[in-house]
Image (cartoon, rainbow, N blue to C red; front, side, top):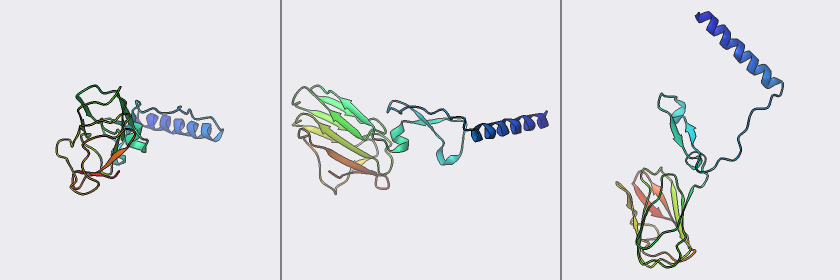
Length: 162
């Protein structure tokens, strides 16, 4: 029985090689969106547990989150999101933005707002902090201005870069 399985596998591989040599087209998928999931094989070591991530977490495609916050908003940046765009109807009095949990080393998060926000609290997630060095603390958002941070995993800090 084992020999039969080996022969069948060999025949299948031979047929696949022949098909490729004949120019049989390999099916291609269209564009991948940020809501898709891609299977990841960490360290090229398959396991019984499947691991999935959005394309931005695998290929460096910028993942974004578009939000229309209301007064006294609280937003936690989703994992793998690198761009948070806020588009409220007007200036809001207060708001809190929390950085993503479990960011990867070198992960960037940028925040931009279509309106000026007069009082914004930026909060690091559990086990993280904002670096005492870099460009300083953000306490308000100026309309159409991008504020960016990069995560340094060895220090577990967000460093403001713009």
